[in-house]
Image (cartoon, helix red, strand yellow):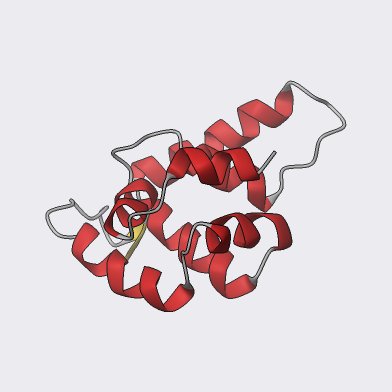
Length: 112
């Protein structure tokens, strides 16, 4: 099993983080629909050795950390992770949203 940025979407929807989950739901993204949309986005992707987190998902965490580093008082939150996941339109999170006809730019705007 590998974990990609599309799994971050599922976790946000399942965990119900206030700001991030609300931004997704406002664009019509539900947990049930996202679960169905994730499976096809995984086809053809190379899994990391022995499963684990993908290089792209690691990049998402790194980007969130870089953004927070600019503001020493800032604590990385779920919205920061979602914002980072939506930067690369080729990533699993954006592919999942595309399958759901959800607009990553509109979601990012809702994150503030």
